[in-house]
Image (cartoon, rainbow, N blue to C red; front, side, top):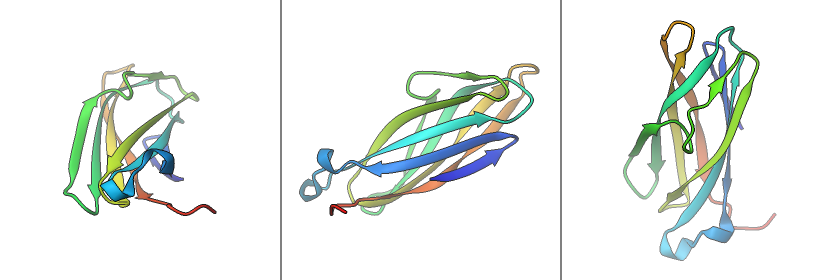
Length: 128
C-alpha cells in the first residue's frame, strides 16, 4: 500500500493482480486497486474530478480523466473517509499508475489538487 497526504487529505492505494481474469498469452493483464480517501482536514470537501496517468511497459502512457470516481462525487466531512475499487488492463505484466483528484472545499469553493501516490502494477503469475 502507498499513501500520500495533500492539505490534510490522505489517499492510500493498494493494487492486486487478477490472475483469474488475465490472459498473459494474449497480452491481457487485469489489475484492481482499492483507493481510500481520508479527510484529516478541518473542512468539508467534495471530489469533483480525477486524472490518472497509466504507464504500461509494453505501451505508451495513457491518460484517463473524468468526473468523480466510479460514478460518484463523494462529499467528505472532516474525519470521514471514502473507499472504492476500480481496475485497469495492461498489455504487459508490469506498469504503474499515479494521478490527482480535483477537490472543492465546500465552505469557500476553493479547488484543491490532491495527489494520488504512484503505485506499481506487477503481475504475479505464480501461486505463493
